[in-house]
Image 1 (tube, one colour):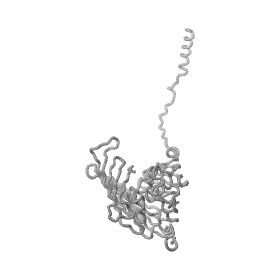
Image 2 (cartoon, rainbow, N blue to C red):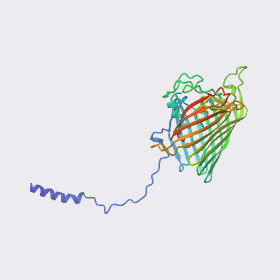
Image 3 (cartoon, one colour):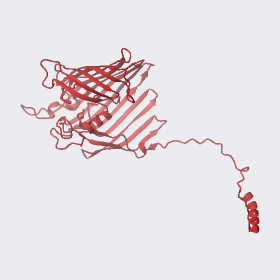
Image 4 (tube, rainbow, N blue to C red):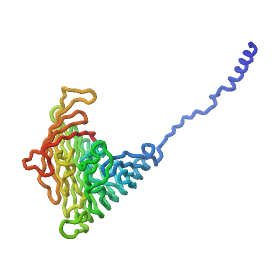
Length: 402
């Protein structure tokens, strides 16, 4: 045994110098290697983008590769959107070119489902409301569209101004139904005529060729935070309103006409006394020339605009809406995780119609909430109320600040 141990020790003594790595002669790599992303990528690893949900499309799932070159100054997305309720696959090519730090050229070419009511709720909040309570605050139409928009940004420490100009060509047609037989699923409200089965208005089938211009103004200074967006669209060619349906008397007067539409959207929030805040919101649509085709109509009504009016029950080529919300936090009460509860007083007024703006419907409300959630009780104080408005309404709201 001792002999074996001696032999083993001798072998190890001989093998260790042989097996040891000699690093004295090995070159040292001190070079800097810069790794860069390939120009074509699949966002989220597989090319998916953020999905959305509504009462016409069902689930909309965008997928496609993304091209980014020239130090992020050029981006193109080749997408296809699957819409579960319609069963359609909508292709599009969209992206932007930024030739300078202050300039942007934005492109969209493709087929899709469009709306004029995105100002009422964000995409995320509208999707959640449709999925859980069957409330979709948008009307829709389908179109093949090609648009190009040039924007220049002018900035100061407190104000950012973004004037823009562009052109648009589209071919439109109706989607959904005035009496839908099926509707996407929701936790509550799938079968309600004012919920997921709410009728979707018809539009005039035809082409709209137009150019547009306008500007956005954003202000952020101290506690003041606000924005104003103004857009003017002039159409050289558009289907007339009566092409959407046969009028009660006489034959349909189908043809092409021009129109000019001005859209204003504003939001302003600022502190008043202590932690109290005041928030203003306004939206207006004005039309010159011929009557707009219905795919350019604007709508309001329901939670988010006029709570005593059914969801999007008012619509037309003229719209005026404004709202003031005064929030008073109860600072003496601080709840775990969600902070202080608050009380709110709200005043809103608005209306919409074809050819003219009807008398405004007024709403007075009182609300209470905490963090993102609030409950409001709203009344219509008019003695001779509009047939579109109820005496009072309860509403539950969620704010995601998006």
